[in-house]
Amino acid sequence: MTTIGNNLQRVRERIALACAAAQRPVKEVTLLAVSKTFGPEAVRAAHAAGQTAFGENYIQEAVEKMALLADLPLQWHCIGPVQANKTRLVATHFDWVHTVDRLKIAQRLSDQRPTDAPPLQVCIQVNIDASPTKAGVSPEAAGPLAQAVAQLPRLLLRGIMVIPDATEMIAAHARQVRARALFDQIKAEIGTLDTLSMGMTADLESAIACGSTMVRVGTAIFGVRPAAT
Ligand SMILES: *Cc1c(COP(=O)(O)O)cnc(C)c1O
Image (cartoon, rainbow, N blue to C red):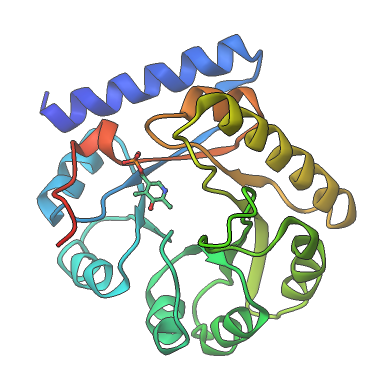
């Protein structure tokens, strides 16, 4: 098996163990393979090992990669920031967007989603750390934004996404607990929500213990990314 195939197997085992420890069925947790900065051959190797859902942060890089992988039945998730001038590319090429944090961006995505494509599946990105330097809507504003996004005709609201600061594990765990409580609160109003996108290479076990339904894993599958230039 390839290195990527072996890595994927190990990540699946981590997810299975975390689910067992949390007494959750393993099918409740989806693995999103974050392939940003890695080329199409890495995605091909992961697909050959059974992975179909991939996350990308940089829109232009992602769209170029998709074109080279058009022969494979892959599902693409945008997990990076979406500026207004990139919404058309995102609405045209992606299946999911995890990073909706403003109604204006959601409206543009809905307006620009091609009519022959299924609705674009979206999560509201919540700044669960309430950090002034981080993307995402405040926890207080998440419910009202979710209500507004749920009305848009060409979007399907699936849940919320958080990137808790993982530098301090105990604090990170508390934020994951808070994110799950917020998810449950919004879900009580919008019953169709089913996705809490939370957990990465360093903190996926804790995220699953706290109720994550989708973990976004890059480094543990593809290796360490080259430093940003
Ligand atoms: C890069 C990235 C990931 C993957 O992080 P790893 O630590 O490499 O697993 C997950 N989510 C988001 C939003 C990212 O930008």
